[in-house]
Length: 280
Image (cartoon, rainbow, N blue to C red; front, side, top):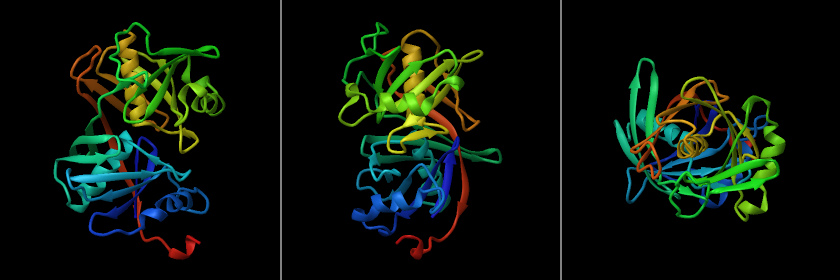
């Protein structure tokens, strides 16, 4: 295995490019076991690096609750670095995901590994409705205006005065399971404006069922909603709890945005061999 992270959003990568390592029917159970931070390795998910019949690579992401995520912006970058280090790809690739094909360009320098992901087209209000800035993709839940957009996976975006003071776990869980987002639920992002063209973001992720240090698709969702409402201009930087920043840009500064790009760094934490006896 190899463990990598993007802005603290960490993943265990299992290389199945040459052969199947974990049978498909056991991949969910495998994620439950090894994502555990006390009895396993500890991670926000397990990524399986696989061959694709139509793209350069294929990614499957199994989460700690045994569910499979359709897409992950930070996970894609971790997958790309693992494939790059293994020599499967060079400076660019396409990746097959359940949400569609995603393009990645990458640069490996002395300062670290940086990847830019061309995201799947955003779907506002979880329907194929172009954003107009009129608030048509907004709902009022409790005391909050909640904006919905699918950036490969469903996201709710809430703008708050100070993201650091929000009870992310408690409030995020309420909105994640709100009937408005049934049956699959949603990820929940709490966003506040910082100095300059900066957004601060904290994310409650479904599947992890808690706050993660960063969320790539959530950062894209927050940036696009903020730009559509005229709160910020693109490109925009997002400060995550992982300490590093993500950068979101698009072909057009206003909706409809055209191609959307997510840029960020990725770091390898460790690599090793799993003991089969740990998985009982």
